[in-house]
Image (cartoon, rainbow, N blue to C red; front, side, top):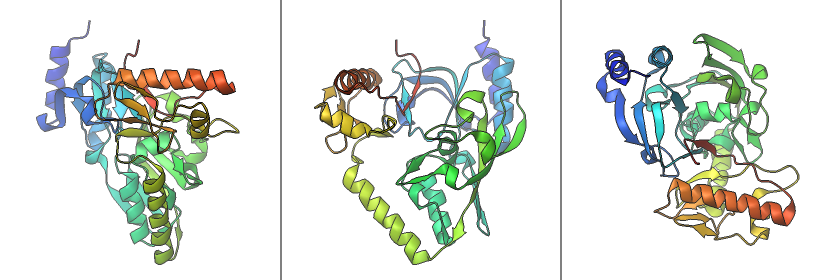
Length: 305
């Protein structure tokens, strides 16, 4: 039996109260704008993460790591235990020569802008992705022909056994929307990116071009988690969904975007259950028509039974 009262006393002794929220609605912390409450929502600084995780393990309190919440679907039932946000409190970015070092809570957009200001090229693809560095490393985020594995050299992680380690990018087994970190329980704390000197006007021009493409092709006016499904080998998820006549298909407040069928959007009053039901419907109907099973790119957290 977890002694939550004693755990809370220990947690508040460890962190200032403004870094701890109880029964915090997760819809405030996900780009889908859905999700029930977290028992405890904790926002540590870099030097505090190790101690918070150790405390959770000591009291056997379950904990979940999130970043910006841009690739998550949290259930309506919420999350038990602690949600530990790697966010604004861990967002420092430094540039030394051609190397950008960013704490895991730094936003990709801000990191890309800092690189551009330093006249460094190679990160333009990531500047419009609405996620954090830590999440981008864990899932090897990418867009428009670029991926994190193209620029990542090393990370500092908190391992599952509570140790701090530096790992090279080669050790992370980075592939399409995957890394070894997804399964080994490590928490990314900082990343080092190797870029190259470039022409500042060309860098800004390319970033502006990609930004315009996103505005034109993606339903940015609605809450979503970005691309809902991974790209099946040899296919495009959005095209498969469109060919199954599912453009605009809706369940409650959730809808397949008519602007880009690869996006599931929240029309304003969707529940996590609406979105989950729609995802399952899309998977079933695409499989029935094309024999291709669409795997979710979105990470599911909580009870969807």
